[in-house]
Length: 458
Image (tube, rainbow, N blue to C red; front, side):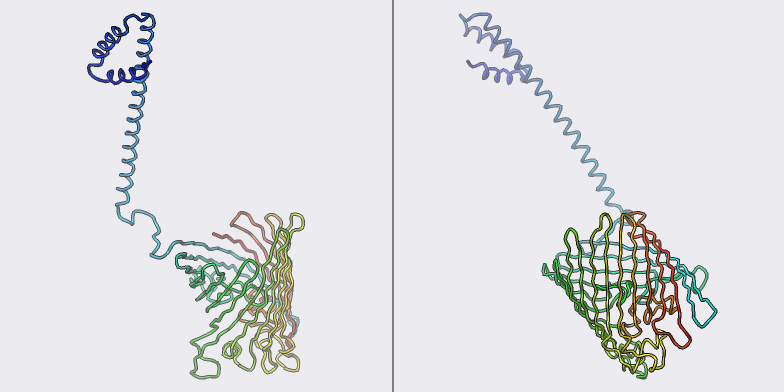
């Protein structure tokens, strides 16, 4: 039976201007050729062909409608593209955008703001006066890191509205005049190159502290200037570096001589963790040259040769995350011929009463606990007068007993509590109770430092 092929021909004829006439002639011829067949069967086949032709016509109409809809949609898209193109052709100043320079594949901007109220009480044993000091302070830091993965370089530049002091980024409010504006300083400026997937990197410039340590050896705001070669893998790490301490100033007693003072350091360590425990252990040695002693102590008869160790061990007790930490440092360069403790730590000046070689040790023990949004911390530190350089140690710890930012020849307790109000905003308080290890002839001194901080990171 050839009904299908004929229906295809009929559908073609139906789409011409003479479709009806040709269809009629074709049907007549087909009827004549089918003479002798049953009339009912012939009529049935004619009716089937008419229905098929009608169905194909309906499908053709639907396709035509879809085509028109697609054309309308295409025209709408073209109009939107044209509008965007016209907008992009206006002056660049009318469009807010950041354009990265050639060779820069990424830019990360971050910073933090900390507002602090601080109160200090100092009680001298041989005096009836209780000395105190209150102040508001802030630390504002903003910086960016530019990356170029194609060449394995990272460039960091940060600013701080704080202090030019190397061990403090805090700016005290209105210290010199009413509602003073303060100043902006460089926080860090470095270039870091990573050597492929080897875990080795080289950092040059003013950089964030590369050493794993606590508050005994280095203040948290310290930014060493020099070069650091670092390596690490999943378990081990190691750093070596050379850093400039002072320059362009006359060394004490040297007349017009202006020489560089430098520090050289190295550290090795391990950082291990599993689902239940975390452990960190680091050993280091830091050597300061003779010019550093002349700059910072006025004499090269004593020097700084600091060996140190730092460790952490943490885990969970129920829902509470607990971490214990410890640090120890010893100055192998301490010499009885000269003492920084007597000069800067309010220790006795008579050599018969105070021996630098017997006051060359510093140590700290502490514990930290965190539950949900709350974190509590306690530490006890004992920092003898000639154990660590006064110009790099923590600037807060000794300020109560010494009334200065030199944390040597002091010991005492630190209590801290912080609450995370949100992901980036926190409120915390710190109390430091300290006293002198070796007191001068005018008696002992106890100090209390209270700090209330509001911090926001972005």
